[in-house]
Image 1: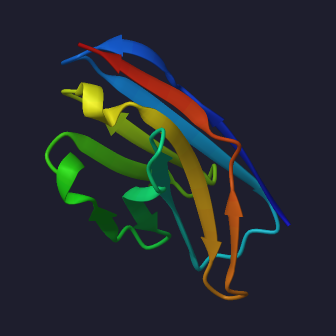
Image 2: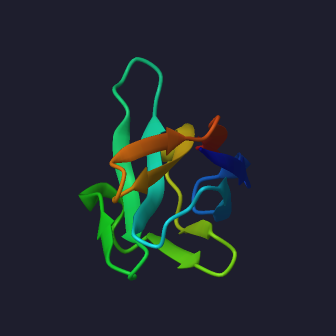
Length: 117
């Protein structure tokens, strides 16, 4: 079992920045992938950015060049630095932990990000 604790959401004006954090605890194997997904009202949950335990990253086209995902493996924590935020980035952001050995996924409770115009 893996438990995720997210932090860092909030309200920011367009053009501003926020940093999300997600700390994982529990039965964590070395081969895993952590990342962020988001869900806006009336829309499906979508990938924002993910990073493997080896540091390989993948970003949604809509956030490339503005968002940066990173992780601290010693702390089992993933970060999402969000710059140049736009109103369309407004959503609930969910942390996801993928156990690539046991092929099991875990989700955080979500944190609200609101970007005002």
